[in-house]
Image (cartoon, rainbow, N blue to C red; front, side, top):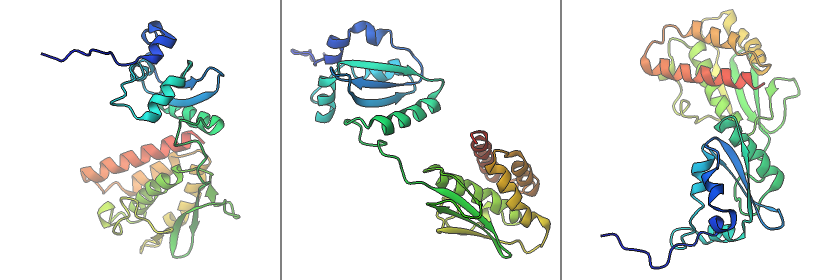
Length: 250
């Protein structure tokens, strides 16, 4: 038989905001701003489902919640809701508000990260891709991209390696490259078979960073048609999809 609570857990937000606030909260992605009596924003959060997320704040159990969390709930006087189209836009809105407002109960995301640029260079011997803190003077860079520059470079290294060295594919990449273990400058050597494809990489990258991914995607697809292992196909499809999504935001 379950043990009955002699003293119910505190419900400061329910008492302050009312049961209807939690009951009528929208079941959609969005952000929520917790404000005190002076309308100062104490905390900003995002949710895939606002109603479900806010339900977690109804009970302030002192035995389960950190003291910092309990202090927050005791000071909240109002919660402002901002609905978003999807979870991605909610995340973007949360990041924007954190940098703008810097709420004192948020620990992460309140300061902008370092500027990161993705630079590239085609030499006689190799294609080089690097993460830098400043834009290249010759225009061969894209940014600032923030932390996304690291993930984008990993994707590009994989697809460009496979396209330039189709006989080796993913399984023939240098050790650690697949998982992002790249040097400061990732160097993809020129293929042994000399053709126009290597020099063509420069034009394809320029088009990609101008918002046009299809030429690069089609070129990679044509160059890697013999790489038919299910694992290679799945990775390539995911990487090319990421490239298309990146270009769509340019």
